[in-house]
Image 1 (cartoon, rainbow, N blue to C red):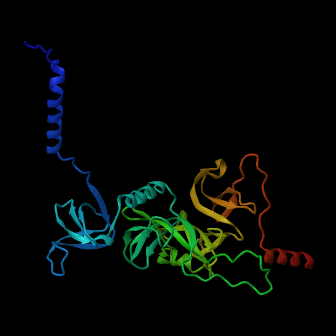
Image 2: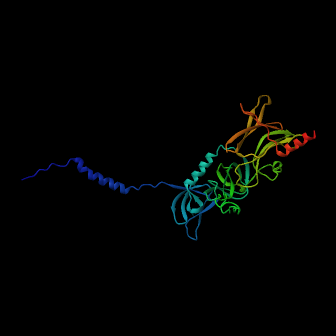
Image 3: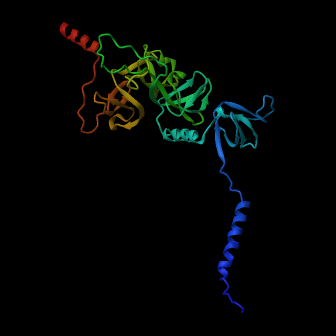
Length: 351
Protein backbone atom coordinates (compact mmCIF):
# COMPACT_ATOMS: atom_id res chain seq x y z
CA UNK A 1 0.00 0.00 0.00
CA UNK A 2 1.40 3.41 -0.89
CA UNK A 3 1.66 5.84 1.96
CA UNK A 4 1.25 9.53 1.40
CA UNK A 5 2.82 12.11 3.76
CA UNK A 6 2.04 15.75 3.69
CA UNK A 7 5.24 17.62 2.84
CA UNK A 8 6.64 20.20 5.35
CA UNK A 9 5.80 23.76 4.53
CA UNK A 10 8.49 25.51 2.54
CA UNK A 11 9.24 27.86 5.45
CA UNK A 12 10.35 25.03 7.74
CA UNK A 13 12.51 23.52 5.00
CA UNK A 14 14.43 26.80 4.52
CA UNK A 15 15.17 27.60 8.20
CA UNK A 16 18.12 25.15 8.56
CA UNK A 17 19.63 26.44 5.35
CA UNK A 18 19.39 30.04 6.50
CA UNK A 19 20.91 29.22 9.88
CA UNK A 20 23.80 27.38 8.24
CA UNK A 21 24.40 30.27 5.85
CA UNK A 22 24.44 32.79 8.71
CA UNK A 23 26.91 30.62 10.63
CA UNK A 24 29.25 30.41 7.64
CA UNK A 25 29.08 34.16 7.02
CA UNK A 26 29.69 34.90 10.68
CA UNK A 27 32.80 32.72 10.74
CA UNK A 28 34.20 34.49 7.73
CA UNK A 29 33.77 38.06 9.04
CA UNK A 30 36.10 39.29 11.79
CA UNK A 31 34.85 42.05 14.10
CA UNK A 32 37.17 45.08 13.88
CA UNK A 33 38.60 46.10 17.26
CA UNK A 34 38.34 49.81 18.16
CA UNK A 35 41.59 51.72 17.88
CA UNK A 36 43.42 52.55 21.10
CA UNK A 37 45.25 55.84 21.45
CA UNK A 38 47.74 57.07 24.04
CA UNK A 39 49.80 60.26 24.39
CA UNK A 40 53.52 60.97 24.73
CA UNK A 41 54.41 62.42 28.15
CA UNK A 42 58.20 62.72 27.73
CA UNK A 43 59.87 65.69 25.98
CA UNK A 44 61.09 63.45 23.16
CA UNK A 45 61.22 59.67 22.61
CA UNK A 46 62.96 57.68 19.91
CA UNK A 47 61.06 54.95 18.07
CA UNK A 48 62.94 51.68 17.49
CA UNK A 49 62.36 48.85 15.05
CA UNK A 50 62.46 46.13 17.74
CA UNK A 51 62.77 45.61 21.50
CA UNK A 52 66.16 43.85 21.40
CA UNK A 53 69.37 45.32 22.75
CA UNK A 54 70.46 46.14 19.20
CA UNK A 55 67.94 48.17 17.20
CA UNK A 56 67.55 50.83 14.54
CA UNK A 57 65.99 54.24 15.00
CA UNK A 58 62.83 54.55 12.92
CA UNK A 59 61.31 57.83 14.15
CA UNK A 60 60.80 60.36 16.95
CA UNK A 61 57.73 61.39 18.95
CA UNK A 62 57.44 64.48 21.14
CA UNK A 63 55.51 65.60 24.21
CA UNK A 64 51.77 65.80 23.64
CA UNK A 65 51.66 63.70 20.45
CA UNK A 66 48.92 61.12 20.01
CA UNK A 67 49.92 57.62 18.88
CA UNK A 68 47.89 54.55 18.00
CA UNK A 69 48.72 51.48 20.07
CA UNK A 70 49.23 48.41 17.90
CA UNK A 71 50.69 45.93 20.37
CA UNK A 72 52.03 45.79 23.92
CA UNK A 73 54.83 43.72 25.45
CA UNK A 74 56.15 43.74 29.00
CA UNK A 75 57.86 47.17 28.87
CA UNK A 76 57.40 48.31 25.29
CA UNK A 77 54.51 49.42 23.11
CA UNK A 78 54.29 49.13 19.33
CA UNK A 79 52.82 52.42 18.08
CA UNK A 80 51.83 54.15 14.86
CA UNK A 81 52.19 57.94 14.64
CA UNK A 82 50.14 60.49 12.73
CA UNK A 83 53.21 60.98 10.49
CA UNK A 84 52.81 57.34 9.38
CA UNK A 85 55.83 56.13 11.40
CA UNK A 86 55.70 52.78 13.17
CA UNK A 87 58.00 51.62 15.94
CA UNK A 88 58.47 50.52 19.53
CA UNK A 89 58.77 52.79 22.59
CA UNK A 90 58.74 52.33 26.36
CA UNK A 91 55.33 52.24 28.04
CA UNK A 92 56.44 54.67 30.81
CA UNK A 93 56.57 57.50 28.28
CA UNK A 94 52.84 57.23 27.48
CA UNK A 95 49.66 58.29 29.29
CA UNK A 96 46.16 56.99 28.71
CA UNK A 97 43.23 58.67 27.02
CA UNK A 98 41.69 59.16 30.47
CA UNK A 99 44.70 61.17 31.68
CA UNK A 100 44.68 63.25 28.50
CA UNK A 101 40.97 63.99 28.96
CA UNK A 102 41.70 65.11 32.53
CA UNK A 103 44.15 67.73 31.28
CA UNK A 104 41.72 68.84 28.59
CA UNK A 105 39.04 69.36 31.25
CA UNK A 106 41.45 71.35 33.44
CA UNK A 107 42.29 73.61 30.49
CA UNK A 108 38.59 74.14 29.74
CA UNK A 109 37.73 74.82 33.40
CA UNK A 110 40.45 77.50 33.68
CA UNK A 111 40.11 78.99 30.20
CA UNK A 112 38.45 82.17 31.49
CA UNK A 113 40.31 82.48 34.81
CA UNK A 114 41.88 85.87 35.55
CA UNK A 115 45.67 85.78 35.29
CA UNK A 116 47.16 86.63 38.70
CA UNK A 117 50.77 86.94 37.57
CA UNK A 118 53.24 86.02 34.85
CA UNK A 119 56.17 83.77 35.70
CA UNK A 120 59.17 81.88 34.30
CA UNK A 121 60.01 78.22 34.89
CA UNK A 122 63.17 77.88 36.99
CA UNK A 123 63.82 74.27 35.87
CA UNK A 124 62.44 71.62 33.54
CA UNK A 125 59.20 70.68 35.28
CA UNK A 126 56.19 68.40 34.80
CA UNK A 127 52.62 69.68 34.81
CA UNK A 128 50.32 67.52 36.96
CA UNK A 129 46.58 66.97 36.59
CA UNK A 130 46.00 67.70 40.32
CA UNK A 131 48.12 69.46 43.00
CA UNK A 132 49.81 66.26 44.12
CA UNK A 133 53.32 64.94 43.42
CA UNK A 134 51.93 61.44 42.88
CA UNK A 135 49.26 62.53 40.40
CA UNK A 136 49.59 61.87 36.67
CA UNK A 137 51.73 64.29 34.67
CA UNK A 138 51.63 64.92 30.94
CA UNK A 139 52.85 68.27 29.59
CA UNK A 140 56.33 69.52 30.44
CA UNK A 141 57.88 72.96 30.74
CA UNK A 142 61.49 73.68 29.90
CA UNK A 143 63.67 75.98 31.93
CA UNK A 144 62.87 79.56 30.92
CA UNK A 145 59.36 78.84 29.58
CA UNK A 146 56.76 81.52 30.31
CA UNK A 147 53.51 80.70 32.12
CA UNK A 148 50.44 82.46 33.51
CA UNK A 149 49.55 81.83 37.16
CA UNK A 150 45.83 81.26 37.64
CA UNK A 151 45.06 79.80 41.09
CA UNK A 152 46.81 78.53 44.22
CA UNK A 153 46.28 75.40 46.30
CA UNK A 154 48.07 73.59 49.13
CA UNK A 155 48.81 69.88 49.51
CA UNK A 156 50.62 67.72 52.10
CA UNK A 157 54.34 67.57 51.55
CA UNK A 158 55.41 63.93 51.14
CA UNK A 159 58.01 62.74 53.62
CA UNK A 160 57.64 65.79 55.84
CA UNK A 161 57.85 65.07 59.58
CA UNK A 162 55.09 66.65 61.66
CA UNK A 163 56.12 68.85 64.56
CA UNK A 164 56.42 66.90 67.80
CA UNK A 165 53.90 67.59 70.55
CA UNK A 166 55.02 69.53 73.61
CA UNK A 167 55.40 67.44 76.76
CA UNK A 168 52.80 69.54 78.54
CA UNK A 169 50.19 68.83 75.86
CA UNK A 170 47.40 66.46 76.77
CA UNK A 171 47.58 62.90 75.49
CA UNK A 172 44.19 63.09 73.81
CA UNK A 173 45.06 66.27 71.89
CA UNK A 174 44.68 66.26 68.12
CA UNK A 175 47.76 65.17 66.18
CA UNK A 176 49.84 67.94 64.58
CA UNK A 177 48.84 68.96 61.08
CA UNK A 178 51.06 67.70 58.25
CA UNK A 179 53.46 70.09 56.54
CA UNK A 180 51.94 71.69 53.45
CA UNK A 181 53.40 72.99 50.20
CA UNK A 182 52.01 75.51 47.72
CA UNK A 183 50.96 74.68 44.16
CA UNK A 184 49.91 76.85 41.21
CA UNK A 185 47.68 75.92 38.31
CA UNK A 186 49.36 77.50 35.30
CA UNK A 187 48.75 77.99 31.58
CA UNK A 188 51.66 77.84 29.15
CA UNK A 189 52.11 79.65 25.82
CA UNK A 190 50.39 76.77 23.98
CA UNK A 191 47.26 76.97 26.13
CA UNK A 192 48.08 73.81 28.11
CA UNK A 193 47.05 73.91 31.78
CA UNK A 194 48.45 71.95 34.72
CA UNK A 195 49.59 72.11 38.34
CA UNK A 196 53.16 72.66 39.47
CA UNK A 197 54.96 73.39 42.74
CA UNK A 198 55.10 77.13 43.38
CA UNK A 199 58.85 77.10 43.97
CA UNK A 200 59.39 75.85 40.42
CA UNK A 201 58.62 79.30 38.96
CA UNK A 202 59.81 82.87 39.50
CA UNK A 203 57.31 85.70 39.13
CA UNK A 204 58.20 88.25 36.46
CA UNK A 205 57.70 91.20 38.79
CA UNK A 206 59.43 94.39 37.57
CA UNK A 207 62.52 95.07 39.67
CA UNK A 208 61.29 98.61 40.42
CA UNK A 209 58.38 97.01 42.32
CA UNK A 210 60.03 93.81 43.59
CA UNK A 211 62.57 95.81 45.60
CA UNK A 212 59.76 96.99 47.90
CA UNK A 213 58.71 93.47 48.95
CA UNK A 214 60.36 93.98 52.37
CA UNK A 215 60.97 90.29 52.93
CA UNK A 216 57.43 89.29 51.95
CA UNK A 217 56.52 87.01 49.04
CA UNK A 218 54.84 88.65 46.04
CA UNK A 219 52.14 86.28 44.75
CA UNK A 220 50.22 88.48 42.30
CA UNK A 221 50.65 91.78 40.47
CA UNK A 222 48.56 93.84 38.05
CA UNK A 223 48.97 97.00 35.96
CA UNK A 224 46.14 99.35 36.99
CA UNK A 225 46.90 102.12 34.48
CA UNK A 226 49.74 104.14 32.95
CA UNK A 227 50.82 107.76 33.42
CA UNK A 228 52.93 109.83 30.99
CA UNK A 229 56.35 110.97 32.17
CA UNK A 230 59.15 112.39 30.01
CA UNK A 231 57.71 111.00 26.80
CA UNK A 232 57.00 107.45 28.04
CA UNK A 233 54.10 105.64 29.67
CA UNK A 234 54.86 104.40 33.20
CA UNK A 235 52.64 101.62 34.64
CA UNK A 236 51.10 101.85 38.12
CA UNK A 237 50.70 98.58 40.00
CA UNK A 238 48.55 96.64 42.42
CA UNK A 239 50.62 93.98 44.25
CA UNK A 240 49.47 91.16 46.54
CA UNK A 241 51.94 89.77 49.09
CA UNK A 242 52.05 87.06 51.72
CA UNK A 243 54.40 85.64 54.31
CA UNK A 244 57.45 83.84 52.86
CA UNK A 245 56.30 80.30 53.68
CA UNK A 246 54.01 77.62 52.26
CA UNK A 247 50.77 76.18 53.57
CA UNK A 248 49.06 79.37 54.76
CA UNK A 249 45.25 79.38 54.98
CA UNK A 250 44.96 82.41 52.68
CA UNK A 251 46.32 83.30 49.24
CA UNK A 252 47.60 86.72 50.35
CA UNK A 253 47.40 88.86 53.49
CA UNK A 254 48.60 92.24 52.22
CA UNK A 255 48.06 94.48 49.20
CA UNK A 256 49.95 97.56 48.06
CA UNK A 257 49.27 100.09 45.30
CA UNK A 258 52.37 101.68 43.76
CA UNK A 259 51.88 104.99 41.93
CA UNK A 260 54.46 107.01 40.02
CA UNK A 261 55.62 110.32 41.51
CA UNK A 262 55.96 112.66 38.54
CA UNK A 263 58.18 115.14 40.41
CA UNK A 264 60.62 112.64 41.88
CA UNK A 265 60.32 110.11 39.02
CA UNK A 266 59.99 107.09 41.30
CA UNK A 267 57.40 104.66 42.68
CA UNK A 268 55.71 105.38 46.00
CA UNK A 269 53.18 103.46 48.06
CA UNK A 270 49.79 105.10 47.53
CA UNK A 271 47.81 102.49 49.48
CA UNK A 272 48.57 99.59 51.79
CA UNK A 273 46.34 97.14 53.64
CA UNK A 274 47.60 94.44 55.98
CA UNK A 275 46.15 91.60 58.02
CA UNK A 276 43.89 90.45 55.21
CA UNK A 277 42.70 86.94 54.45
CA UNK A 278 42.62 87.24 50.69
CA UNK A 279 41.36 84.64 48.23
CA UNK A 280 42.19 84.48 44.52
CA UNK A 281 41.20 85.64 42.02
CA UNK A 282 41.91 89.37 42.21
CA UNK A 283 40.36 91.19 39.27
CA UNK A 284 40.94 94.63 37.79
CA UNK A 285 38.84 96.82 35.53
CA UNK A 286 37.51 100.32 34.86
CA UNK A 287 34.39 102.12 36.02
CA UNK A 288 32.71 105.43 35.29
CA UNK A 289 32.32 107.54 38.44
CA UNK A 290 30.54 110.48 36.78
CA UNK A 291 32.34 113.62 38.04
CA UNK A 292 35.59 111.73 38.60
CA UNK A 293 35.39 110.15 35.16
CA UNK A 294 36.50 106.64 34.21
CA UNK A 295 38.91 105.28 36.83
CA UNK A 296 40.84 102.02 37.21
CA UNK A 297 39.38 99.64 39.80
CA UNK A 298 40.37 96.40 41.50
CA UNK A 299 38.25 93.87 43.37
CA UNK A 300 39.44 91.72 46.28
CA UNK A 301 37.79 88.61 47.70
CA UNK A 302 38.32 88.64 51.46
CA UNK A 303 37.48 85.96 54.02
CA UNK A 304 36.18 87.00 57.44
CA UNK A 305 36.60 85.18 60.77
CA UNK A 306 33.59 82.94 60.06
CA UNK A 307 35.06 81.87 56.71
CA UNK A 308 32.56 83.81 54.60
CA UNK A 309 34.04 85.41 51.48
CA UNK A 310 32.93 88.89 50.42
CA UNK A 311 34.06 91.18 47.62
CA UNK A 312 35.45 94.69 48.05
CA UNK A 313 36.09 97.05 45.13
CA UNK A 314 38.55 99.96 45.18
CA UNK A 315 39.19 102.84 42.78
CA UNK A 316 42.39 104.71 41.95
CA UNK A 317 42.04 108.45 41.33
CA UNK A 318 45.50 109.95 40.81
CA UNK A 319 47.55 108.80 43.82
CA UNK A 320 44.42 108.27 45.96
CA UNK A 321 42.87 104.83 46.55
CA UNK A 322 39.36 104.63 47.99
CA UNK A 323 36.95 101.80 48.58
CA UNK A 324 33.86 101.88 46.37
CA UNK A 325 30.83 101.78 48.67
CA UNK A 326 27.98 99.76 47.23
CA UNK A 327 24.49 101.21 47.14
CA UNK A 328 22.88 100.97 50.59
CA UNK A 329 26.15 99.99 52.29
CA UNK A 330 27.43 101.90 55.29
CA UNK A 331 31.02 103.12 54.76
CA UNK A 332 33.52 101.56 57.14
CA UNK A 333 36.14 103.52 59.02
CA UNK A 334 39.55 103.25 57.33
CA UNK A 335 41.98 100.78 58.86
CA UNK A 336 44.88 102.50 60.62
CA UNK A 337 48.01 100.58 61.53
CA UNK A 338 48.70 100.44 65.32
CA UNK A 339 52.00 102.34 65.02
CA UNK A 340 50.28 105.16 63.13
CA UNK A 341 47.47 105.25 65.69
CA UNK A 342 49.98 105.61 68.53
CA UNK A 343 51.85 108.36 66.71
CA UNK A 344 48.60 110.25 66.16
CA UNK A 345 47.72 110.01 69.85
CA UNK A 346 51.20 111.29 70.79
CA UNK A 347 50.75 114.32 68.54
CA UNK A 348 47.36 115.06 70.10
CA UNK A 349 48.83 114.88 73.64
CA UNK A 350 51.53 117.39 72.69
CA UNK A 351 48.88 119.83 71.53
